[in-house]
Length: 71
Image (spheres, rainbow, N blue to C red):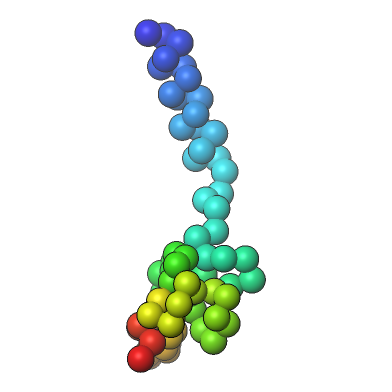
C-alpha cells in the first residue's frame, strides 16, 4: 500500500513541476484569450488546423482577444 501511495505521489509531483505541452501544432499561434488546441488553429496558416471548419479567427475587442470560428 505504501509503495502505491509513493508511486502516485511521485508521479503527481513530477507532472506538476513540468510545464504542460503545447496544445497547438509547432509554429502555430496557441493563445487567443484562451488556449486553442489542435485540430483547431488560429490564422491563415492552413497547417495549423485540420480543415477550414476548424479555423479560428482571433479578434480584438476592447483590448481583449476573443476566438471565433471562421466564416
